[in-house]
Length: 290
Length: 301
Image (cartoon, rainbow over the protein chains, first blue to last red):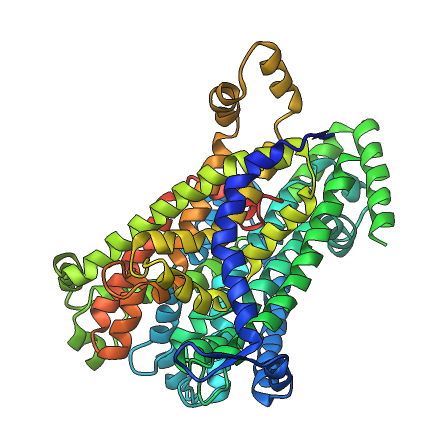
């Protein structure tokens, strides 16, 4: 759509600008302010320059949390994306099954995140949870409070349970937009199931898949509530991801300077990924109008 | 690579559409397509069972007595009880949590959608100085980790004396909900042809009258979807809501976490509280079922 040049449109954007400035820009300015200062309490601040950033980038604690978070995101993507595509391919295309599938699959997405944590905290317990009890009865040692591997297993499985549906729904939306004629043509050519997937379905899902990957990366990269409720970052620091570490630092220990520096580094990483996301979206928009 | 695949299929699709296929062959084709995925229903079914099992377990626990939960392992409640729900509905410290959550969530939804409507219109219809940067900047706020904002929010709202009020949480949640609403609404509005605007102006409609009378009904489903997602994301958020409240405006999610850490024993009530938080989403999900993917993808599917 060709848009007209009109700078008065700024007045329409103004309410949003004011609101977001209040809830994002001012807080971010505070963070920047803290990240370059040191304090001994009593609201007395000293210029600290880039000391906090220096400290942060040389602290193993930060790199460990970042590494754990990246491993977590990679694991989550590696499981959810193929699984989501597979389920979407097998979803019914018409009939009563469609709304039933959509509604039931979307259910985990709409549960408050701490309740997701609670559900899995209970579900995984050996004494009262179905999963824990079953694993225990099968003779598998499973204790997510003490065993790091069990904790990781629980957290990843919980995220798969929570978010795979998002990938499914996005892929499904891409799949139903493929006209029937494509499949008919493929049948006439005697195309195999695999080549239908490879040359028709996958290219058509291209963009939704990219959105799904980016959204899943962002959300898993800033995960806080669910693992916090289930494992509390433990055992030890085994499941302490970036957000958990940051909140621990800012609220628990009140190390404002380091926390602010970490916030900014964290935010920069997010900004980079957002930029990729935005470029993908706008490039596609131009292609569509052409 | 994907490009070559695309042209290949398009050509074939053209042939399929223009060259008449013998009707018998066509019927055979249709039958083949219908018969091929005979076991296909298995995959979604197994997946849905996997999704529902933990939810069922929570529901199951909420109808049990605490002694039954901790002493015996039962797949369904043996001594069916509504006691846990009764506790929640009679204890003000529990049901106030729900009221608090609903108050700030509704406030936030109203503010977000009201502010986003004109902005989304501007983005979908006009080009102006810095529009693309502004649109991108909004997205970064949607993507920002709430953990980054916890500390500054606490200090900002303390300075204004807004800690422990509903409006504080409602405003704080604007951080991610306003951008979300703008993006979703912009997606819907761009689907409405510009000629409609122009015709309305020629017919003598003023901008506000056109916007309310003609344009808003046209994107009614978009407004509904945006409102639903603002409601949902504000409802599921815990970290910011917990930080900005102490007692008077404490959301139900925060009350739940406190119960776990304090006693850790009242599993039945905890399960019942969890079940009750799922209900708002479960109630409206049917109406937005076709838009769920669109909403999560910020209106871009």
